[in-house]
Image 1 (cartoon, helix red, strand yellow):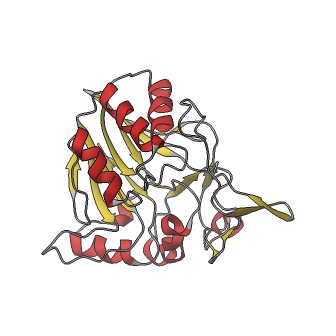
Image 2 (cartoon, rainbow, N blue to C red):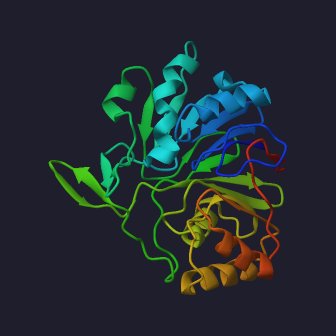
Length: 269
């Protein structure tokens, strides 16, 4: 499996791509290709061109959750996928309106609009998206130090209610040496995601994790997360997007982490 970072907050020095506070990844698993999240704007498309990545080969477009730093690029996919249309896979709550103090923070496209041109698969339960990759669906709470936290509000039926981002999901790649977690923002809790990936795959060995861990403060949750990573002896940790420098530093003091940036490619067997 090969993964290429199309969008991240970080761009490597002397690599002239575009960065934005968002995430988009291009994943190739054997003969299948997956676009995971679309970032905040057209940047995922522009970086793909610079990197020589042919996004039109994507058979699946998987969304980690409905926030606009992961779904904003949806407004550009019609111009990209003019012939073969990918299947769009997400949690059922992904396209419900979302708002915070700064205004709308949800997907710019509705489920109804997307269904006009795309096969839209909305699932709370895990589903296979390629030979070795599974979309995890809704993540249950499996560790006691990662309670769900409210992020603004979402509109259900006719009223806005507190949003605990139940639509937040992730991918798991089942490799030869264990499982690899690919996450967007980890509003569900990165350790909850890892534990659920173990349950879904039946594999206890976690060989790598890449994506946003949604960790900012040096607090008890961060300390427990580091303890979890150490106990699971995860050899490859690649936090990006929504992880503060302070959190990365704290993790790195205990376990070496890798730097992620736009243009980075990694391969896992």
